[in-house]
Length: 311
Image (cartoon, rainbow, N blue to C red):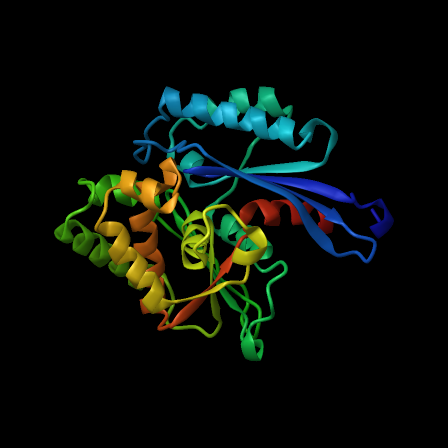
């Protein structure tokens, strides 16, 4: 296939553990990819899921409803698309509980990708439309998800080094943060565990600009901007200091999930797991000895769409 035969638009859909995210990209006359539509739906497909367990029927029903809505919203029956599933379907012993009815909706299989493949696709999407990293140092992409966190170093002098860690906001919240708001001891235990896992699973301090991807990072961006309504253009590329992120973690752990919704507009299936996400981000900042990170509004869904457009 030559360049003139490549599709001019593509849809990428991320079946996440907490959120389903879908985006459409078109290629402009100059050949540049542009995100023209981008929607996320909170689903929590991994609700109460343990490794090797089965998905809750109610969670599957929520996921299939969201999938049907997104397929219609993006007119996926008439456009090239790629649907990729992540940790939630890697964890369950019976992914077909979701993938079989999903195929009926989509007319195509759901692709369950491994953690390293996920990290590479996330990284491919995350840096779209970001300013180049300072001094050509490249990026360290961190995607904080519902049941896993992917980290990948790309650009600069580095080759891609994808790592998938079993650290996700839903799993950690269910395991450690049993009170609402969580106790000081629960937060301390969570922080110790996350740092232990990060120190064990990630390489030492590599060069590169730290980039945060997915719901925790973008929600934090909206809080920093003081905006109640989603503003993709304002959030994408926003720099947030470690001190600000730590301050938000302290503020969020002092109030319960309902107050996070009422006072700050954080959505229901994000509000309860937000403190765990902030803990992961702040642990990565500490581990990598960074004073700031950059928010990307892109991620896996963008990488999936780009893989169709660019092969």
